[in-house]
Length: 127
Image (cartoon, rainbow, N blue to C red; front, side, top):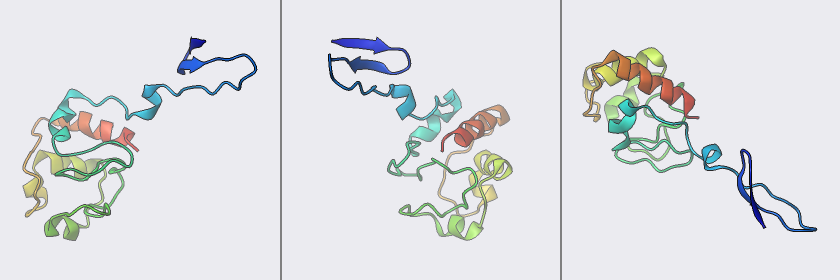
C-alpha cells in the first residue's frame, strides 16, 4: 500500500518489509529563488553538482575566490581579479560587472539595489 507520510512524500508500506522514506522534492532542490534571479538563470546553474552554462554554476559562490570554479572557462580579467565573492564584491559586480572587473564577460547588470540584495541573499543560501 502507498501512504503519504508528513515531510516525506509518498512511501511504500508492506507487511514485514522495511519502510524507506522517500525524500520530498523540497529536500533535493535549492531554496526558492527570488524573481530578481530569473535573469541570472539564463546563464547560471544553482544545482549542487550541476553543470555550468554560459556562466559558472553559482552553488557556493559566496566566499569563493572569483575565477576559481574548476571546469569553467573564465575571462582572463576575472581570473586575475583575485576578488573574493563576499556581499560587497557581489553587490558591486552585479551593479556593473565590467566596471568592477574591466574585461569581464558578464553582460548583464542589476542596477536596482533591492534586486541585488535579494540575489545575494539567495546566493548565500545556495551551498
